[in-house]
Length: 150
Image 1 (cartoon, rainbow, N blue to C red):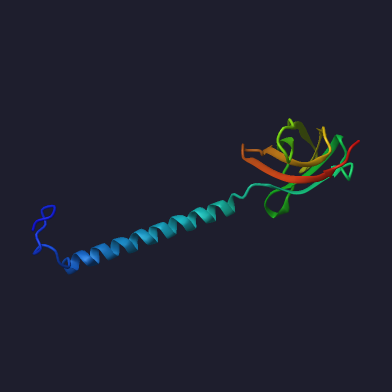
Image 2 (image 1 turned 30 degrees about the vertical axis):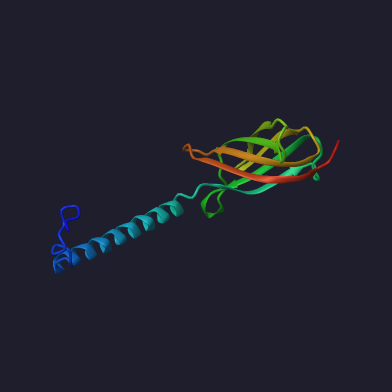
């Protein structure tokens, strides 16, 4: 019987050189993949962006109305990350409420302050959107639970 042009006599173990070629090809592919993965991990560690290392809301506990958000950004080696443009977005944890937006300005190297209007009592999520010098973007969030009525 011939299936796809292959007779039973043609089926058997491939010659030794082909088995070695195939095995070395798999080994080469695995080494290449490991090298690429390692290089990718190393690069991301070197280029780690700044992060928000501290945030504070005033008044504490938060109340309906304007709240002041203070953020401290730091880069590698815990150095202050200055020169960022930061917008703040406040969203309720349940659907149906419009988000509130504000802008945080640098008041000291790596220290930013802004205001946002919380329109309702309940739980909120604060989203921080920063564009760092050089164009890198940073997005982080934190929760503000139990905002009290005014």
